[in-house]
Amino acid sequence: MLNRFSRRTFARLLGSAALAPTALTTIATPASAEVTPSAPAARTFPQGFLWGSATASYQVEGAVNEDGRGPSIWDTFSHLPGKVKNGDTGDVANDHYHRYKEDVQLMKALGLKTYRFSVAWPRVFPQGTGTPNPKGLDFYNRLIDELLAADIQPYCTLYHWDLPQALEDKGGWQSRDTSEAFANYAGYVAGHLSDRVKYFMTLNEMSSFVNGYATGRHAPGLKLPPAGVNQVRHHAVLAHGLGVQAIRAHAKPGTRVGLAENISACVPIIETPEHIAATAKAMREVNAGYLTVIMEGRYTDAYLAHAGADAPKFTDADMKAIGTPVDFVGLNIYTPTYIRADDSPAGFARIPSPDSYPHMMSPWLHVGPEALYWGPKLAAQLWNIKEIYITENGASSTDVLTPDGHVYDSDRVMYLRNYLTQLHRGVSEGVPVRGYFLWSLMDNFEWADGYAYRFGIHYVDFATQKRTPKESAHFYREVIARNGLA
Ligand code: GBH
Image (cartoon, rainbow, N blue to C red; front, side, top):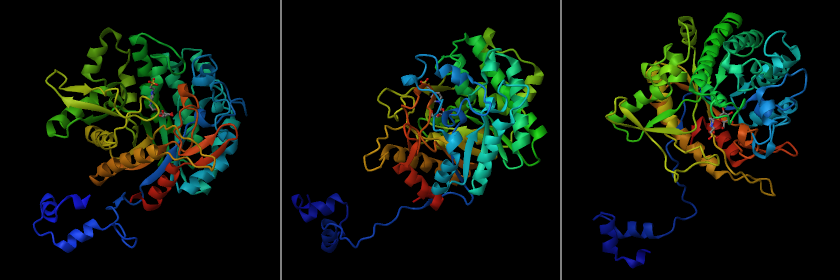
């Protein structure tokens, strides 16, 4: 390559008149084996940053008929033909109900500081309400004790979509009674676990499970008209608010209560003040039915105007409950929502992603690392939030297990590295993110996609239940050990 240029041309190309022949010789000679490449600047997180991983009850537990567990809407839904890819169900899933000790060892080997799991409501109240089933709660007692023995802090989600079927039979989230039943259940569980669990999240991703009543792709598989969906959404945020109050009433003092919401993480398509301001407006409006109403205790004018005659029915008392202050906010962030300023009355426009946009195996999972910078930053600023966790972030990949036991998920590693770089960017500016939960510890039941889409950093052979660390597990172990990247 070099000998196609004269020495002088090369010096000119480099723009350096002072390029000495010796320097040129150095460039032209391949680096010798003794050269130690300089390390990139360390991207270290604040001391005590909580590195974690997350799962959810129906996605990993299995044992659906054991120890008095009642059926949930996902048992019903996954057994309906055509609802889940390949007819998969959570009947066995990762058999985590029996293998939790082994799974805590996986966490320990990673060096996890914390683990986010969810309690299955139908294990604790098989009928949703009424007499609790002590054997159901016992499983979580065993799990929590095992975590604490391994020095891993438990973070507990109270609802990750497995509604007791008995409640669905009475209207499910279409009924206000479900919000109250949730609060009773949440208070009961927090009352029993808060001697060892300090952090509780009420509901996981309201915006996702409400879709089970809108698109029908998730349980219970309904396609309600807009007024019905708006009412379901209202009952979800109300359940959160009543849940916060019930947890505070029953849990030990010092217990911290929040939620885990899948916000639309708005990202300015151009990082200029004008577009950034529009993006903050967009963040508030596109999340109006969920995080915004919870943080502000009222629906935005634009939300109510847009809903018109289909607006949810609510009382002042509902709104007060919904706006009950939380101790922290959990954000599940996977994909960006790109925004630009425009001169419409709203002041912003959403920029859709073209088909050519890079995504992971799940077609919806567009890769946009900046979501992990702008999402928490704008949320913290809009609502003056002092404690944020990334309660989920992760990626699906094709994940082939080689005969010699490797999974080279370089796509997931690069996804994580780029997202964590953006998270670091925010944290170093003072965005109050205190921890990060990678979704997921291991491949599991990916809802309507069954076992076809893998999100784990451990590969699971569902025929044998063998767990194998992927390349991404090795990557994450290094991140945790160094408390950062590089
Ligand atoms: C989270 O959802 C969930 O909390 C978790 O349980 C899940 O396993 C994980 O992420 C990975 O998906 O198929 O076009 O109808 C993330 C948000 C909302 C993204 C529902 C997929 C369905 C899109 N999800 N959405 S579509």
